[in-house]
Length: 185
Image (cartoon, rainbow, N blue to C red; front, side, top):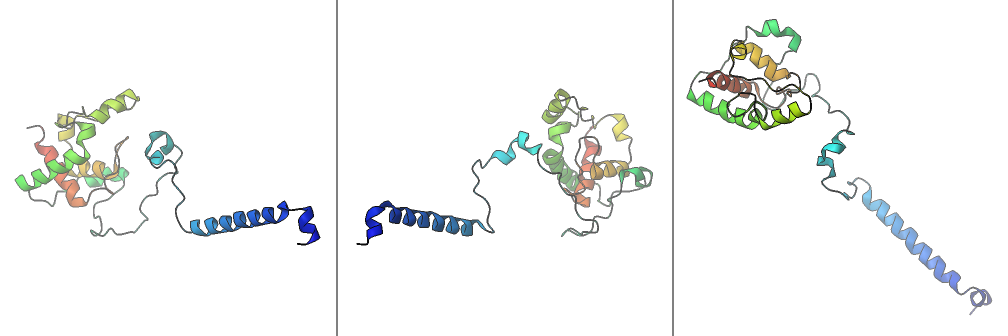
């Protein structure tokens, strides 16, 4: 045994412990590069209070074509006059109405209500939070709008209604409009 080891017996143990800690830090740092961080609170990002701090969502890049083909009738809301001339390319009938009814149930009924009266559960929350109640889709004012006007509103959204131009295809939006025409009955 050497003389300096007798004087400082813990020095060797300390150096060994420090080396192990340094090696562990290097290994852990190498394991996390290029991977996701450990998610301590896995459901926190679904919490409404954390969504406030999220950056705004990006729209689809201009000129991008979805895998279903180009969306042919996506127009800005300020061109509503031009949209009045749009006509539905879908054949009128039970099949179109059935498809539209299912799409309405999944995408619209929570705000506009099952019968389209504007009394959906989300509509109640919007009113409570000082927003405008979703409109009654069965009234004459809404039914008097042309298919093109309804298509443009559905495509571009209005007030707190989302833009369905990115969520539904042209054909699906036309099917919803076909169903809206039979709602008052």
